[in-house]
Length: 173
Image (cartoon, rainbow, N blue to C red; front, top):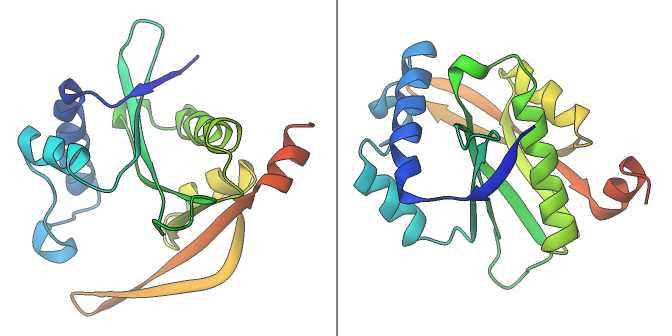
């Protein structure tokens, strides 16, 4: 079972560790993908002084930190569409369905508490596991595909969404 709680400053150390692990695993570098937050002050400044309305930490029953995600409004004038961003999971817990459970909780929170009409997310096409996860949670690919050029490589970011109508069908309201 996972619980969601609001992001707290003490969670920054976990995020730093996860980013370091991701960068090592995927051979990412800051010069290739832009500056990653590298210390707790950077991360806390990012969360407390930015446009992010809802940052969550996923924990188990013993408050062991397992994952993290944010929800934001892409358009400050439109409070009906939310976007999930910066989904990150403790690497030692990969392959156990935690990502799916976190995304399902984000979906429920977005539609039940925040009364969103649509929830969106962008996924790099080469991340097959993430694509499967989001599709299994009810997200559909939409036609928007953004192209990013990084160090001479073109990366496609597939836009996905779930609407409140689909959410109600999936969760049998």
